[in-house]
Amino acid sequence: MNSGPLTPKAAFHPRTAAHRDKGLGKLRLRDAVAMAVGGMIGGGIFSVLGVTVALAGHLAVGSFIIGGAIAMVTAHSFAALSARAGRSGGLFVYLHNAGYPRAGSYISWLLMFGYLIALAVYGFTFGHYAAHAFGLPGAFANGFAVLILLVFLGINLRGVGASALSEDVVVLTKVAVLALISAIGFVHFSPERLAPLDDKGLAGVIVASASIFVAYEGFELLSYDYDDLVRPRRTLPRALYLSVAIVTLVYVTVTVGSQMLVSDSVIVAQKEVAFAAAGQAALGPAGYWIASLGALLAASSAINATLFSTARQMHEIALAKELPAAFARSRAGLPATALVFLAVFGGAFAMLPDITVLLTFGSAVFLAVFGATNLLAARVLPGFWPRLVSGTGFVACLGAVAILGIQLSLHDRATLLLIGVSLASISALRLAFVWHQHRGPRRGAA
Image 1: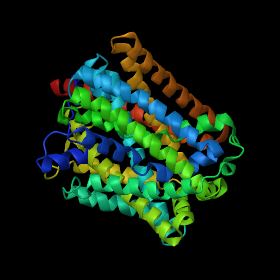
Image 2: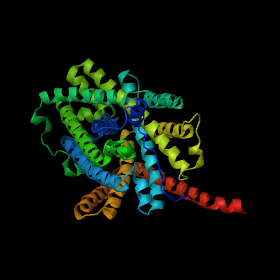
Image 3: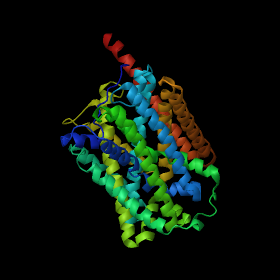
């Protein structure tokens, strides 16, 4: 099996590819921030608002602050590891370069699975907002989820995935919709709406922060674009810190604004489409449609970006012989096998009956990956303070995963079993792949 360093290309992110296609050269700070903010918001707040309020109650905003803090510490680790590597890459590259090729290879599998779950979250979000907007029963949500994945599969198979949606316009539209409705909520700010503040207790805040952490996934994509940044050693950390701070502020603002517009009970009851309820309370039917269209646009953009970038990552990793050779196959220069795989399995997971399951699943995967990032940074970075910051991030991620495990074992063993079986299957498939790789040359020699 190939144990050399992986060398994934930088231009996986559709914003990067579109930027290059326009001949605009290197990415500036604002370009990088737009990419990371767009990657994180995606379908995020549109999906997680109801779940967060259900778990944390009036203190839901605290869950986003905790999640933002973990993301900020992890951003420090990504920035430091990228500067240490001096080139585009990602955690599996950093692990290979640090002398941990097996861990790096397994992480590549786990990370691809995490992006598949994120794809399912976006599909679920689109499906439920679409069904709700047209007044159709919940069964149609699954059909819309699968349909939108197939639509963007077709778009990407035609080779236009990178330019089908303008990332800048999408990011601005998402933020504008969120800002408009949240601002109206703040105009009606009343402390009584959040009294008593700790109605669910601090434990609920901590559990919620772990359960919805997948909403912060996306900033790590910048590590694949290191070579495309202007003065990357300066631009990358600034872009990471700024984007995480902006997204945390957006999530905090949207949460409080929504809670001013509608009661927590309404947000929880309509958790799959909670922001649409907030939009209707803010601006009536027009606000309902604005919020719904914002969610549909955000989810569509996220699906397109995730399919485009993840399929190309899988293709490159397969070329490095760290994924099955089938994913290295291409059609007209496009990673067709990877695209079909992601769309099919993303659609399958999008049909799970509850968004909480998907969010918890995705959060567990990315907390594990980000925990590994922080652990590696704590081991290899020079200086006491950088190691301390990354070590704190590792402990926080590990603690969040443990909290999720305890919460699921007490209240949702079916989801815990699904996560366990899925991770065990990934490990078994990885072991089978390694065995086949080692066995192949000897068999051929014989």
